[in-house]
Amino acid sequence: MTAASTATASRPRALLPWRLLALFYDAWPVLALWFAVSALFTLGYTLEGHAPRENIAPFSALQWLLWLCCWVVAGLYATVSWRRGGQTLGMRPWRLRLHGADGGTPGWGALWRRYLVGTLSLLLGGLGFWWALFDRERLTWHDRASGTRLVRLPKQKP
Image (cartoon, rainbow, N blue to C red; front, side, top):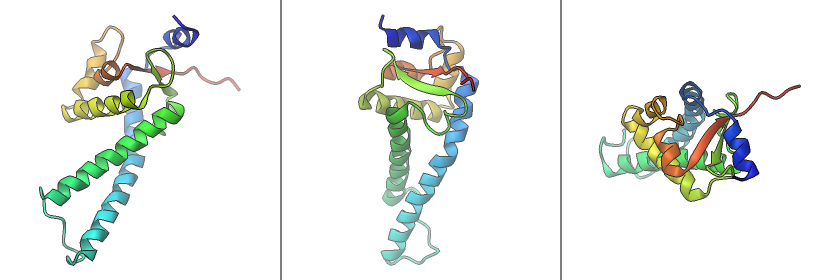
């Protein structure tokens, strides 16, 4: 066992309530990013000759593309944040940090796998998150699938 993995193992796992609070906090910057993407789509749709108050048709190819772009932008926010400092904005107030199973910084593949499985978990009513209540190591589906661990950092002493 390396020193980094020993340090990670000694830190407490991030319990479900902390994860859900961080997810709630992260919804706000992600929502802002979605607004920006939607504004670009709306501008393009209007410039294409549609009336300014006309909506993109429900379940059209353009609407599916919009949702895909929103999903990718949210994924970029999460994976870049995790890769650069191990934390998103929502994880900082709750002192949560993402590590690889070995205690190091996870690779891009593991981060995108974490994001994909986390998305599927949310689409299934959060089932992958609730799984942590029964898991022996308190890991979620996306922790297991990506080989990453979310830990709670100790309080900083002044």
